[in-house]
Length: 137
Image (cartoon, rainbow, N blue to C red; front, side, top):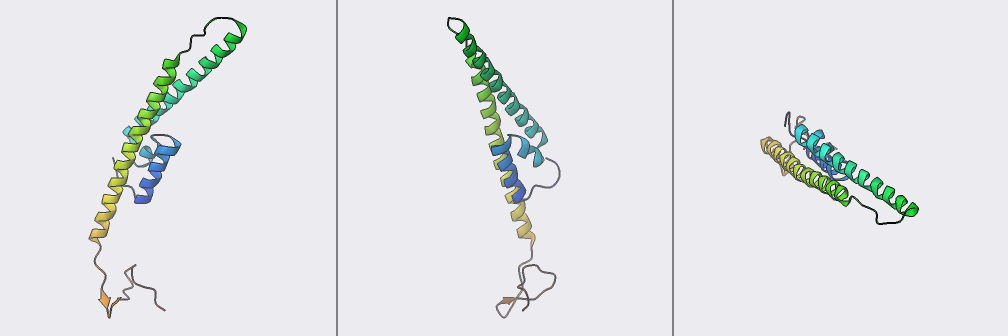
């Protein structure tokens, strides 16, 4: 983890990328390069194993049409691919939660460092340097 923690919006974007695009992309975007690269590699390896399994099943199905006998189906490839992908997805979920916690903690620290608003007659004072004062009418 290098640099400053991501903003809360950036952490939410990382979570969405990790869970709905590709496990690891959001982690890389949030600065967790090693974890993100491992998650991405694991998910792509799992996806690749599933694709190989699918084509071998199709090949066996076409072979059954031309010959007789029982096809030998390599279901272990599909299960290994699914396991790899689910492992990467779960790891990316845990990393996303960690990124969200880090961003929330950083936001809370930034808010704690802000000075409290100054009130005059029950309204915030019109201090031009403050962004939380009401607009002048």
